[in-house]
Length: 140
Image (cartoon, rainbow, N blue to C red; front, side, top):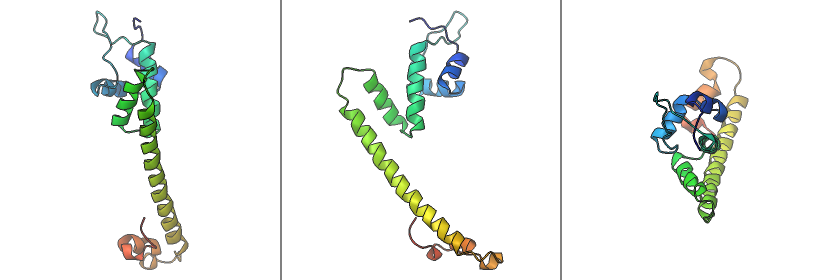
């Protein structure tokens, strides 16, 4: 399929900046597009789909290495999807761990704020807890 989309049009359709497209090309996630006689990059709908896939995977928090592996899998549609499940499962585990840490952090912040007497900084529990971890309610 001959490309007739400029980098600006690809950028608009996929919802990413042109610099991001160039970055993904340099990282090998996007194939180098053919060029016009005037040396302009020429993209097609396949580039739009691939870039949209990358953008969505990154929005979901997948690391670049996992995006690369998922792209390789998507390039072989008849292959086994076990690795995709494994990658997604590892990512889910990491997300759950982050949620646990954020929940603990939220609890600590709520505790610090609730103990604040709204007096002077010298007596502020927020400042005290930030200055000395021993004043925190636990690990976070």
